[in-house]
Length: 514
Image 1 (cartoon, rainbow, N blue to C red):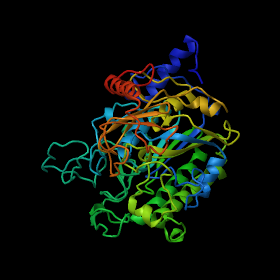
Image 2: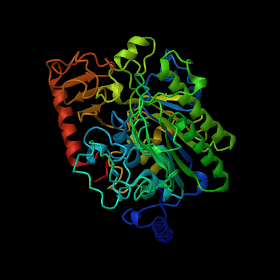
Image 3: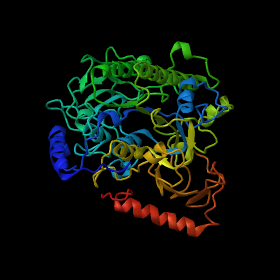
Image 4: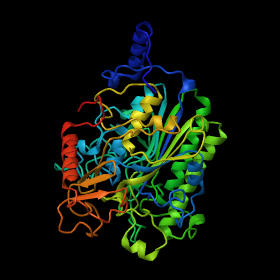
């Protein structure tokens, strides 16, 4: 959809009203069009945590996990086969989803944030919540935040020594019994119910609208269980139960949807789940249900929670005009030992590598969209896509124009939703980033990697040993088994130059600015 044009007589007062309603953070963002509520879809974005490309049966018929709810979602909508998280790990991907900007442009150059890390997103950074809020939406986030939070300091406590964002603060100088001084609310989310970071990283507590659900903080013992069933010792609410977290988040999402009956506004519900990230804690009814061990059982549990939320959405007759997006923040944490123990299950499909890696297994993710009012028949798209692209797409669907200094790396994929056949590439290129800060860039069938090895946890050096850089033809070799850089030096050089240009200029979207 093109940006809605209005006469100046309508434009000026509407813009002024929108700015007054949105507040000081939106003053520099002009050009908002007021779109009739009947034309605006509700938006539900469900972000799984460490779910692999091959975990869902709709992507991998040989998956050893039954995923009926997500398979049904795919059968009712649009399934993307070449979608990617903004990074091979979670904090930077979440930054990109919320801001439409590559996270390597932020202070976080490698790794992820800790539970006590300060806010990574700047207070004046434009977000998808801001975007939809100024289009008249009720905005909310329920789930795993992992983008940093600001708590008040304990009077007289020693400040943390200077550190890089990927180095986790201990948080000893923070009063986590108090209300947040900056969190989702300051970034445009009117309602929030979150945990600070991953479920294996303290502090362990729920924060509702910036307030801890319990102010009685205790020490929660860590787990010494085997691979996957692990969490760190640290502070948390006395009543916090790790094993119940996934279901609790699903229940809160259902409650939010039920409340929608009382509000005529369209809504944004961003639902970042805690699973199947470690600790793998499937509920009793899911244990032993998969052919992929405890991890597979937790994937099945994740599918069931998504099913509960979708059933609530459908029962409230919100299905037809709700844009549901389901995806994952990176590839599966599926290691060689897991592969040996469960050889029939391929959590990352045929892709090379795992979560953290620059290879496709690190960042190619499932991406399913359902919107019955618009997507009438199930279909598939091989368009190159990034989670960053949600911002530009939602801007288009709500007939807004992104300001130049927002969503710098976000591309509008709404034409793919609106047209059954849309052959024009939405993206000309896409930058990938590993946990160690290694870069690669994709253009068409070619993928250039600016380094040797995985850039992450995988130790497999086949096809890269003795070569300082990598080049893959993903059309002929989707498993990245053959490094063809020596046979195609000109292509590698062109992609390297493009990567450096895009990193340096601070944006990739046409019309954007750093």
